[in-house]
Length: 188
Image (cartoon, rainbow, N blue to C red; front, top):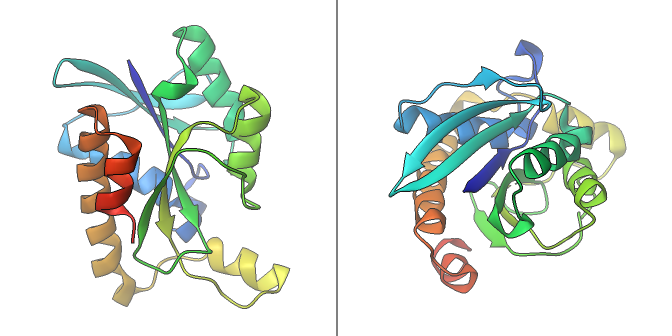
C-alpha cells in the first residue's frame, strides 16, 4: 500500500492558492483515475485507487497545513503503514516557479507542514515531491501574502504542466522507480 499526502489548507478561501499546490496535485491525480474523495475520521479526506495492482491512498489532510502530521500519523497507524511508503506533495518557495524536485529526506526547510509530519512520525526520511513556487521579497508579511495568494492567470499554463508532470512522477514512484532515477528524471 502507498500513501500520497497532498499538503494544503482546507476551505474555499485557500482552494487555488500557491500553498495548496499539494492539494491541487493530488486532486489532479485522483481525477485522472476517476476517483473522488470522502471524509474520514483520520483527519483527512481520502480517495482509494489501484495502480498496477498497488493500492494507493490519496490523502488531503483536513487539519490545515501546520498540523498535516496528525493525518499522516493517523493513516500510518490505522493501516500499519511504513514511512517508506509515503510520498508528500508539497510547495517550496526556495525553488524556481515551475520546477519539480524529489527529495528522500532532510530538514523541513522552514515549511510548517513538513515540520508537523516530522514531529508526528519522528522521522525526516520520507519522500517529498516539491513544487517550485519561486520566492517573493524576504519579509514575513510578503511571504505569507505570496503563499496564500492565488496563482495568476498567466501562471496557469505552468501550473497545469506541473500537475501533469507530477502525475507521471507519481506513476513512476508507484511502479518502483528508485529515488535516484526519479531525481535524475524530474529534478531540475
